[in-house]
Image (cartoon, rainbow, N blue to C red):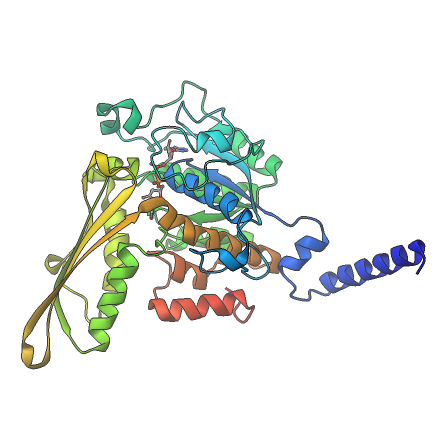
Length: 403
Ligand SMILES: NC(=O)c1ccc[n+]([C@@H]2O[C@H](COP(=O)([O-])OP(=O)(O)OC[C@H]3O[C@@H](n4cnc5c(N)ncnc54)[C@H](O)[C@@H]3O)[C@@H](O)[C@H]2O)c1
């Protein structure tokens, strides 16, 4: 075949693909490849430990084939591979991070998570100064520089400037990783996402997706949102929920339970300020209450961050106890200790949340993504058991559910 004939055939194929797109054939991720925009472009607020693990992970999976990878719920998610994600913009307020390339900022102190992929190539994206608002708790200044946030001297960007940065970067999804208790900052960045027309994934426990006032705004604008508060891959919440579900299925009445957590990262340091904890406690507690056959009295359920142990760094230890009654009302109890590196544990889920959000954008679906929110988040707008949420999410990925 002549070279020109091959070229003509390619052109005809390309036109056919474009036609399929125009008639809205659900070929999702393939659309991007045909249009040569194959990566999902993300913007990140908060280049802390979780963002570090996510960015290391995107690079890590680029260098490892699908045959020999571990640690992912999906290698191919609706056509997207783990490395089909690219950072387009980033915001922080720490002097050691602002102004640096994202690939350097993620390794700066006070980040202390494990380095499982040290060679992250330059992204060409510099970290912008964000707005501090209530992101930094006063007590953080009582700690050594290596363990705490140091606010940059740079002028904070206005809302208009942040919206323009988002628009200019062509970011499609904004990930929020602000510290617990950043109520004003989270609302500020959610507002920026709305104004820039960018989807929002809320990884922390300020209620945006689960607050109808906010989620309606995303729905009205046709912008997808997933939230709130990421449920780690194999963390305290999913373990606690699974055990409670097992007790329920085996007919064991639960009387009392606790989940005590310790860690040595800035997330745990920040949470020493109990005034910032209200929504974190609600999110973690409701996540377990929602799988119980009968709600426990507040006095009989205690779940939350319990202490900051500096030498633990990003290692989180969870002590879990469930007391119940078996056949004949005979008492029993279960105790469990779980030890996990906190941030890769969240990134293993965020990497799927981003790809689900990318699919929604490809399909023109806006508003709350109920299925991914219920599987990936602790405090979603609709709670389901984890096995139901898993199935709903698979159906969403396969295009069998709209959201
Ligand atoms: N690790 C997990 O498994 C997990 C699970 C659920 C939720 N989360 C939540 O995710 C969030 C991020 O966790 P992390 O461990 O990465 O925290 P981190 O403390 O390591 O990072 C927070 C980052 O936000 C920056 N920041 C503070 N105020 C800001 C502002 N106003 N604007 C922009 N940036 C600001 C800090 O400088 C820091 O870089 C926390 O709220 C945490 O509770 C984590």
